Amino acid sequence: MDPSLLLAAAYGFRHFTPNSLFEIENRIAEKKAKRAQAKQDDSSQQVKEEEQCSPQLDLKACNKLPTIYGKPPPELVGVPLEDLDPYYSDHKTFMVLNNKNIIFRFSAAPALCIFGPFNPIRRTAIKILVHSYPFYWLFLF
Image 1 (tube, rainbow, N blue to C red):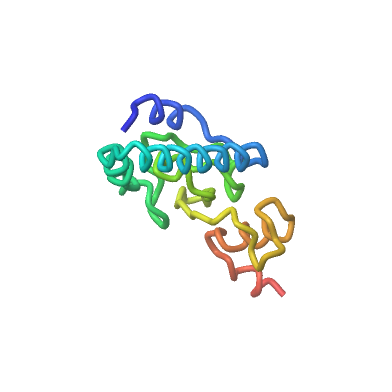
Image 2 (cartoon, rainbow, N blue to C red; image 1 turned 90 degrees about the vertical axis):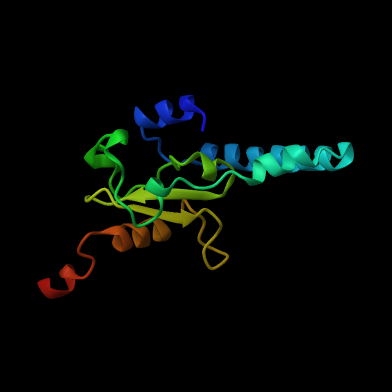
């Protein structure tokens, strides 16, 4: 793993924005181009090295955020963030943390083919899903 990626992630959480999604799509396109080039050059060694990359076990979904990343500020709780795991740098995903620092990972593909990752309805649904006590508000009435 590249130590610079770990250090960049350790010192800051970044919001998931349309620019983030554009950068991910560019990385995916670059990876496809490299694979096509590797197939033409018959350098299967390069392809095997890329396929060996796997997600970090401490950053799996539904796990608590490791203390090495620090505590996120309260304004970033329930908000889509760029994924800290380098494995997902070329996957259309984003992560959301709840107030107990539990990681939730979502796809950036449109939900139901109409709700993109930046749609207010989808953002509200995500906030409800990641809330620590999602059904306590039902008992308030």
